[in-house]
Length: 432
Image: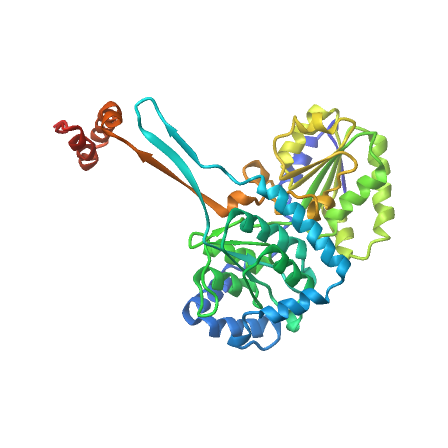
């Protein structure tokens, strides 16, 4: 764990090194992923079954690719009623928040009489990738599928790997609750390729969303353009801004809640109080001994950091440079400090708003930009599953008023047919 002090000599260099720290240590997989995608494009279901048998270590026939409704029903009925109720609480809240995001069409008539507007339409089909095995997160199913359904997407196809044949019933139950249309027991780059290009069993989709390993991320990168994607997710991260009013143990646990995602996750504390910095450092060490996931300790040792700032003007500026996926503000007046910060994926205001609440049941989406991309990117939302189309409707009066300017600009660009297209409607020959 690093300790930095903005007053110390060399701080700027050390902070820049923190920004540039490479946390994604995965080796390049572009070549093998390209081979997998080519195999799916060439041989469809046959390649999908062969690759699934190879990587997931259990045989798969073409007739087993799609998970049947009865199997989904059995899995849903088998889970603990308390867990099913928790899924429903989360799903209801996620749906309610995302329903507020539905955009409105625009229609207007300007002073010339020209009518114009913008119309929103949902995508036809979306593919959802869900990790399998120990990294099975039903909460991610809800967060990815529900915004698509709220947006009006009619077909939501989900791919989930089943290593060794194992399938998490809670993932199937979440998919059923979220309104997923079809589920396939395939994963990896081959699943992404199947959703992008289609096979005899899996029809192609228009956009692919959802987290995955390095092969999945690279496959999404390579099929982008053929389909849309939600982004390339990197290791998770949190920045916590805390002053002397914060509880050191709460801060410590919230840092570790992010660190336990994986060994490449990053948790950073910015504080203006040296006493709190010391107390949090001690509390983290104490709490680490109570956690069973080794990722938390490795993440904190290799990527954790406590930064002492002079004041919150400096703290807000440093936070913006970090542009973290998650930002927790645990100060006396969190709203005032948040108003000074521009860049983060999602913010959690006050000591009673842990980031973990947002991961499950608060309502806003937990699929967020990582790796400082919050400088220009946003979290998943209804807007990712709709597209906009603008339209115009001119009449002779409006055309007469604005058409000559279009003719002049087209001629200046040397586009004669463009100029003639407007000029002929004006009853005028274009300029020579």
